Length: 225
Image (cartoon, rainbow, N blue to C red):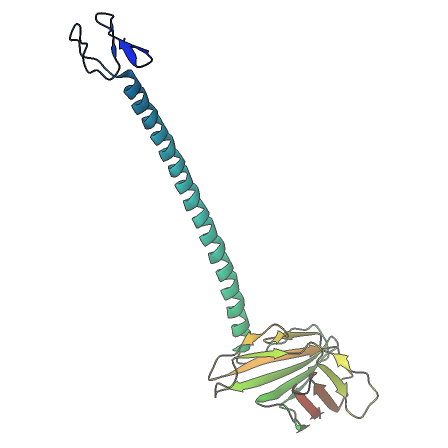
């Protein structure tokens, strides 16, 4: 084996010192191997191999992270699209459905409304009085594409016309978002939604419905005869 001493190495054949950069021994002619260069070359190969392993590791982690992000996005989009589809399905029903366990139910179809200054294209098609709630079913005519969405103020209420009854605030809705939530309305169609209020006397003859705000939907003198 060649032994290196500063800039000199010892010939493995004859044992004499010769310059390290020599390719052969000047004394015996034996060909030499540069130990320093071999050592550096091996070190470089080891360093390159380590770098490649690190790069491969980062690539694998990056791919895993990418698939995780895509999975989360797809799950979120699915939930959102499912929610929108549900809201649209409710709005597109051809006839509102009521679920109740009341023995006595009173329904008034297409009630006459004496004054509706801000009703726009909204129409009350049925009022249902039960022991559990008062339901006001409505339509919104979007055949001309005037609406992109519908929403109702949470402070909407009903009162008995010409009586001292306190206002009954809206309890929940079906087919319409409660502000700030919105429900998309299909263009060119008539959408249905229902507003639910606390129960009132089933012998009531006249009812008012008001949405809060100056431009809210207002229906005065709803006839329950």
